[in-house]
Amino acid sequence: MQLNLYVVGDIQENCYFAWDEETGKTLIIDPGDDPDVLIEAVETGGLKPEAILLTHGHFDHIMAVGALKEKYKIPVIIGERDAELVRDPVKSMAGLGSFPVQSVEPDRLVKDGEILDLVFPVEVIETPGHTEGSVCYYIRKEGVLFAGDTLFKASVGRTWKPGDHNILIRSIRDKLLPLPDETLVLPGHGYHTAIGQEKQINPFLKE
Image 1 (spheres, rainbow, N blue to C red):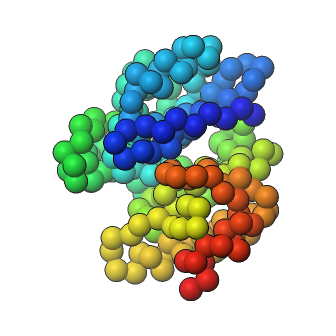
Image 2 (tube, rainbow, N blue to C red):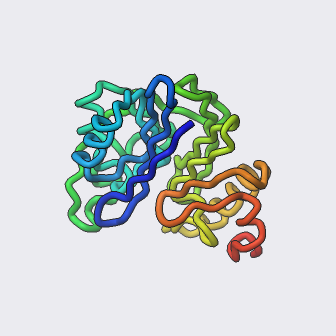
């Protein structure tokens, strides 16, 4: 598996391309903005997008979804409890900065424990807390976890409702920390990390 990171938009969101070097088939994870940049990367790399995976539905992770879906005719996949966030720009929190978010109809709603038969087998791990329907995508064979805004290097995702922080921490402890220590964690913002490293340095997991 090959990986590329594109930091996009005013919020500096991490969009990832994961592709098979032999076939060029590509998964696009959280295309948050700058669709022209992402399309150019697809075209110059000779890649073949197969699906868009969304870890959650906040505006800064979805602003390029419409353009990519229209151009490449590929399905949009998101956790079932976050579907309304991509359908309704208000619920995606775009109004926080008057960001232009297009309503998108997801093609597949997924839930905990599903294994998606895509370019690579992708395991769906539900991690509510940052949003009700946040999910992480785990490619077990490659030891890679796309964590969205659930887990960051030495930090965790922001929450808004009372009690959601506790739900988030429980999601991380119960669902993510049992993964192998060497698992590469690719978050929605900032630098990559590893499960074992977060066990050692993350202050929120010592609460």
